[in-house]
Amino acid sequence: MRLIKFALKAFLLASFFVPLFLDIGPVGVATWTGPFIGLLYIKLAELSIYPSKANRTKFYKWGSVLESIQIGKWEASGLTFILWMYFSTLVNDYYYKYPSRDGLLFVYSLSILFAIYVRKSWGKMFKTETIVWLSIAMIVVQSFISMLQFATSSTIGFPAKYFGSSGGTDLLKNDGAVRVIGTLDSSPTILGRAISVFLPFVAIYPAYDFFSLKSKLIKAVVMSAGFVTILMTQSRSAAIVVGSVVVLWLLQRSRAGLKMLVRPRTSWSKIYFVYSLVGILGVGVLTLQKAGGISYIEKAVSSTLYRFDNLALLGNRYQLMKGALLFFWENPVIGNGYLSTMYLAEQTDIFIVPSWRSFLRVHNAYLQFLAEGGIVAFMSYLYFTLYPLYRMWNSEILDSKTGIAFFTSISMIVVLTLTSTAYDRYSLSPLYMILLGGAMGETDFISSVKPSNSIDE
Image (cartoon, rainbow, N blue to C red; front, top):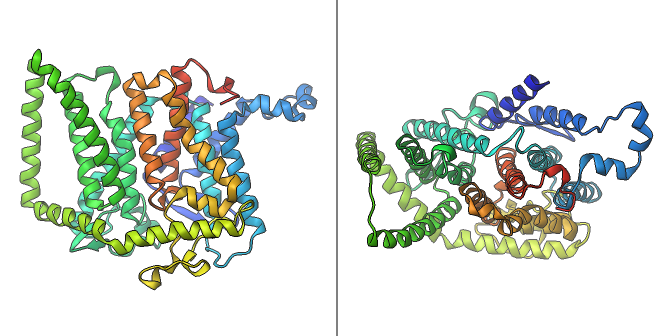
């Protein structure tokens, strides 16, 4: 059984790099859902969901089921959100029924269960080291594929190009600069967001040898690759959250640097690190210059700034938020069903520029689920996503580098879910949820409270 669990875990983590999706009617299948369902089945068996004959009578009592599964408030909020979204989806008629609606809802529901599973399995199946190495691998792989896509101006390395129909299109271009997508999805924004939320964990690599020269070089190279990849996606939201974190970090370091002026300290390892980093950056700049990368970076920066200046698009975001609130008031309790906010402009009194973009849905997770699932789904989703931040803030986890990494990453996720529609994509949602579940699990560990006993949280 141990070998099977290890194989399923390895398959699960590897599948995050190849997020394919297949809609088969009422359910959807993503590459990561198969191994997760296998792990979930094993976990339920370990929690005695399938009891012996001697205990079967007791098992059928609802209290015994809760005692076996150990459902706390956080888990209950996630389960409530899933059930209510299904209920709202089933009872509503749709202005436009998205073809893969049911399959996408199924996969997103599994991603929420995945967050709960990660918390319950923290310290055994999943640890902070798992997140750190996943972060490093994700950034290295995506950076490499993105460089190939930039060099060839094609979707080379994108899995759907070889196994589906959505990868055959050209890369998006903005002001002559291509926007890379890596292996995750057809939208550059998804790649930028995935890299963003993993960067804090690269910053703490490795926790057991934090000050060694080797770890500093690896960390510097991987983080630089992550920054460059975000730049190549031209994702505004990723640029904002990463830029904000970097500014806060620089302010903190500046404050520490002022203290160091009073008592300056240095060492040979620090000198070697500076020389090595300068050498690596120098080689990187020369390579980019030979490959035409410098001119691309100039275009990418100007294109991203241009996207910030596009007031019509920003006005659309405001109009969509207004439309979501209007849509919510039409059915405030039950909601209007999952993905009912598609073609929101045609269902409410809002104005979108240009008019052909009327298919857009609201670019905000909380307003989306307020309109689609009503007040019940909204409150459940709000608790499920914000409670980890509240719990970390009120625990001792922020005294550690691991805790700061989790808090920074979850804060990024919350901000990013306020600005786009990518949060429920089959390619991005499991990455968000492994971090949410990990934050809860690590807080359990730091607080010396095991997840299986934390019924009230």
